[in-house]
Amino acid sequence: MQGVSGLLSAYGPAFGQALLLTWKLTAISFVAGFALGMVVTVLRLLPLQTLRFFLTGYVEIFRNIPSAVLLIFIVFALPDLQVLIDYEPSVILTLTLVCSAFTADYLRTGINTVGGGQVEAAMSLGMRPMSVIFAVVLPQALRAVVQPMTSLLIALMLSTSLASQVPFPGKELTTLVAKLANDSAAGMPAFAVAAVLYVASGLLIAWAGATLEKKVRILR
Image 1: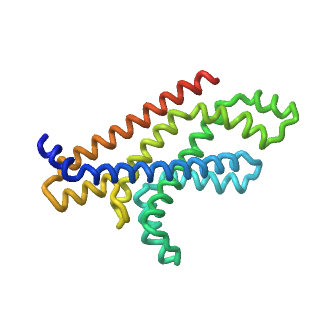
Image 2: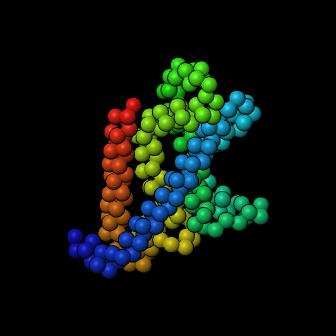
Image 3: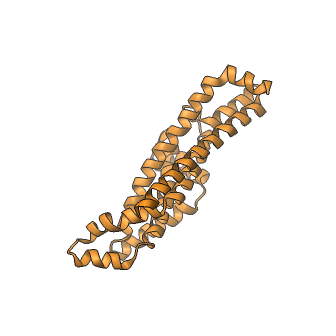
């Protein structure tokens, strides 16, 4: 216990900054990935077989490729193709691509819960296909996938530890813990503090997701 209290007294501000950076990476990646996933979902609804085939491949590739492998490819392979991306954008891009693929997959599942009769009724009222998608289909699909998206956000937050694999300009939680473990004998207390912060962040996200799900369940 003394090790943890001593560690916090010496590195408390550093842990606070690392936690904020972890949240920042999570928020940016989730917002960007969610937006991109929405675009992919809508485009997959269009009656264009070639586009559907391409986007299905996109989803399957980034949903199944390990995030670490994708990050290594972006950081170390793309420069050989004359594509240079800084370390922080590389981490964000990696998490965004993975998030977008899972978002598109979850939204497709949510769309399948919308009754076909509702779509037909909307079309019979003279609504255009895109209007039906945005006014009828997507709102119900989003309500149906609150819990999967909450789990995705938690997984994304934990995946920010990928930043420890590259010379990241800042120190998120895992990077900070690794540095403390290498520079001092505070390895175990540092890992314990980081674990508590990860768990607390995950529980906060889970609580927010459960609260949101209750609200949208009333709206159904």
